[in-house]
Image (cartoon, rainbow, N blue to C red; front, side, top):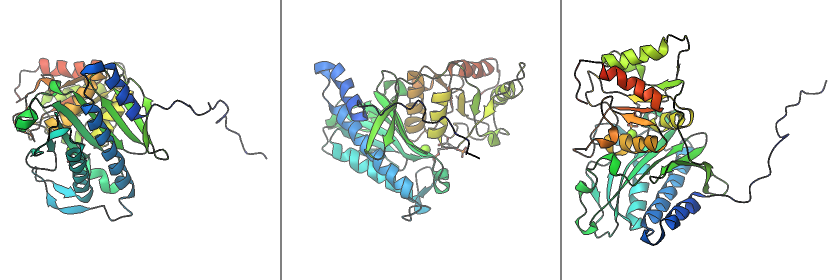
Length: 349
Ligand code: AHM
Ligand code: MG
């Protein structure tokens, strides 16, 4: 008997002859700004995309080249650093320093802000070189998150250049190292997603102008913490698990913010890492986790809140500070906010 046939391939399109690479995309955005664009942001973003390719290559080979496991040190938050955390950090610090366009850096893995001596760079970059470390050794998706601020006077570059609210970011993005390597970027004119074509060594525009659906069907929280959650968070979760219409939301939680936010941007729904009775500031770091992801979310038409205030309005007091995060589809996050608005309890945020 003949094997059953699939229809795969019946309507395959020939390959495009007009690839939009990330470099081409960034250059076209620069050209659209005309004379006022110096090209510095372009150079900086090109440096970042190279670090993403290099980190992606190391993540993929990690098990084979003895890059799994702990590095034997801990970072300022007291977390054990993995070898890949340290390597990814060094890759980014070296590339950004060498770009000549960056005079201040803040990394999750480095205690103090890094001031690049003698740099005339007019930008500051905040980053988590490899987010989702707990997933690294299991081969689960991890990612790099970055945000970019303008530096007013590079000769006086200081930590003050990054102690600014997320609404002041000029660009933000992340690279997800997963079944495919995706770089998602916003320079404040919407959000575009690129997929690394490993044969070409180029990020190709595959997700132009990402818009979050106004409502989703997925919630993404670490419910193992619900014992500690404030009442509005738990009540909201109840409302989507036992809804009046009998159609509960699905739960998806990878435990890598980049992967959970990436899915939320594409499919819609809500991602949350709440503050709670035990962790009054939540877990996620403001500068290099909450702000870039909130910037991308808003640029894609979604909402990002601490439960009671817009995340991008928060002014950070120190570079490794944390804040609660609820982000995603507009209608879903607005529903969550209503539970906080109706609550007469107190929380820090
Ligand atoms: P990390 O920067 O140490 O990797 O921690 C951040 C990660 C996020 O990617 C993820 O959303 C969260 O921590 C997961 O935390 P938990 O394991 O408590 O659910
Ligand atoms: Mg992180």
